Image (cartoon, rainbow, N blue to C red):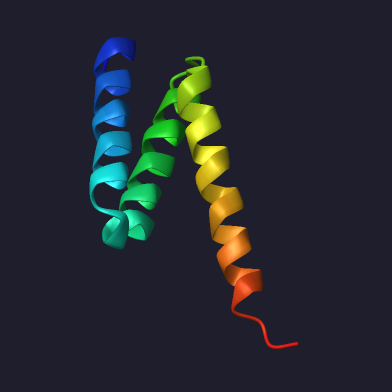
Length: 70
């Protein structure tokens, strides 16, 4: 798969995550797989994609700590 095709597929996943937050965990895993494809092919991970993944991970971490009893 070419760089442009991979990027387009990743952007579609990012849109789906925003449209369907209830499925975010499943879609985020698919996004991680796309990022792994970039890396496996020796391609640079687009900055917007890397930043979006980081934001999702931070949000996930906040949710984890919000649910912990004090």
